[in-house]
Amino acid sequence: MSEIESSAPQARGPADHSVREQIVEAAGEHFSHYGYDKTTVSDLAKAIGFSKAYIYKFFDSKQAIGEAICAKTLSAIVAAVDEAVAGASTPTEKFRRMFKALVTTGVSLFFNDRKLYDIAAHSAGEGWPSARAYSERIRQILAEIVREGRESGEFERKTPLDETVQAIYLVMQPYVNPLLLQHNLDLVEDAPTRLSNLVLRSLAP
Amino acid sequence: MSEIESSAPQARGPADHSVREQIVEAAGEHFSHYGYDKTTVSDLAKAIGFSKAYIYKFFDSKQAIGEAICAKTLSAIVAAVDEAVAGASTPTEKFRRMFKALVTTGVSLFFNDRKLYDIAAHSAGEGWPSARAYSERIRQILAEIVREGRESGEFERKTPLDETVQAIYLVMQPYVNPLLLQHNLDLVEDAPTRLSNLVLRSLAP
Image 1 (tube, rainbow over the protein chains, first blue to last red):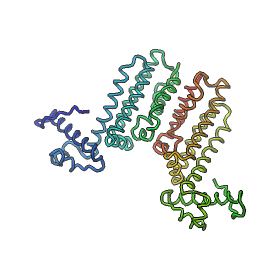
Image 2: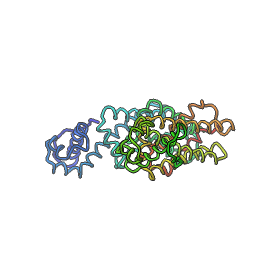
Image 3: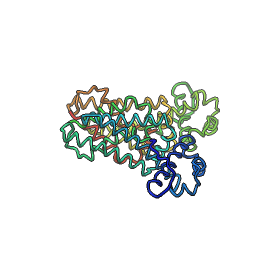
Image 4: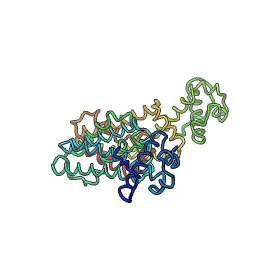
């Protein structure tokens, strides 16, 4: 989340990338204090010490900056999931850890960085590309786990893979989608384990 | 929904019941036009032609009237589920129809009587007794179906019944709970079938 290059812009390419990062970082800070809705591009420009016109060289709109922040936030969740899955030895265990990591990082974002969470929820509600890419990535990780379990004989192979993955994703969605998770916070203690058990029963060969 | 006795109050008992019904019906109409939040007990009293004091003889508060309306609304959903389940011959089919009827009636309420839907969603969010009784009743119907399927050998018997029912209820919740359903409307076309298939795979002996 904090891998920002702070060098000043000199040339095209890496330097431009660094300015973008700087804007995203500053905007993240600002949104996280004042909220996405209440911050204007002028506020951001003032806070970073850039002109508004200069910011518009890098981002078409406030939403484009929101997108970039959202992508970063959701990437951090995906990274947590990847790490959790990597530590497991069986597909069954991978699935359990994946579900748990998704819920844990989502809930932690909700309680520790509510304003950034709200941007993620907003992006999910509006179907921003960042949110769509996120749910696509989660589906991919899930598909890899199911495929591995089928190959090892741990999971059944009769149901079309795509159907299985889509249905499991629907089961997880209330806890994965930031727009929905906030309405399910009273369930996050038990639901992932109960639902994982049910899903794993459905995957039994 | 419209089984109101319209006779004037004469004696205790049935007549009192009828006045209650009359108030609930009039309040339902009123809320359905103006919204729960924007209607006061005075508005209701004027609309029915009763004094405010007379209404307070029957209901402690506006919430108590909201509760009664909500109970009626949710009872109508339960009745639709009961009817759908009664027409099925196997536990598998009963489960499918139950899930489908829940979603169909919930969605129809959302689109045809949005203000009443909002009261139901509000009641679910606040954990009103009417909403709690509703979800308890859905769980009961579900438990009966699972029990029947276990007895007939259609469903597995290893998992404790309570655990199975609780997990299936969690799967259905985003579509059953009016507070959540409104965020899942883009999924109601496919999700009940996909999720029913997954649940039924998890129930396989």
